[in-house]
Image (tube, rainbow, N blue to C red; front, side):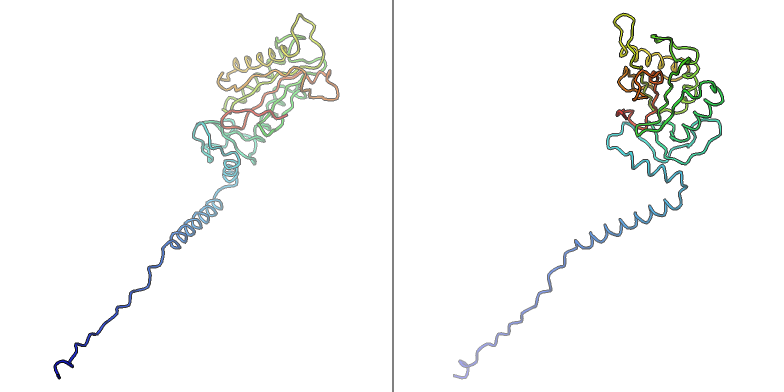
Length: 263
């Protein structure tokens, strides 16, 4: 009987499992945050160590950035000079046109052109209007009473017109940005045959381009040659004013050479 009463004693030992494994996603997020902060402070340091002109170039690069650039463009540039000869100051943004293109600084270019005009073409200095548009630097050569760029009703350049265009071409040789040439007329009707102010403005724009090519500018520098007839007068209150007869030359900022009308 005593043997029957002896029952085996079974001891169950339950092993407690460890806690569930913590996810590591927070580590990835934290690493990204640290990396971003490091890049941010590195950028701040680089900006602090850069010259004001280089900071302006960086600002310009991001301001005019495009996902569809045709060629590699560096916002640092190789040189801030517009011309090989010294002179003038640079305090404005710098834009670059295409691969290996020279920089264009709007205010410096305008100052250089005004200086060259004053020194070499003082007698027609008042016939130049140079301004800075969103599209680029615009140089306008206008007619006035007794001083015209072209023979009346013709696309034949006068001597003064040739001098003006040759001077501009000479000063644009080292600026490789694309160029747009526009022709404009006054509102007086064209009296010869069936030619209208539209045709005359186009012919004059083409003649201006041809003269600048002869003065040394490469043909591939020109993005467009356009004639507007009398539709865009400079003196809007008097469409017949001789100053509405003009040639406009725009040195584009756009890296791809595209042209959006600035009027």
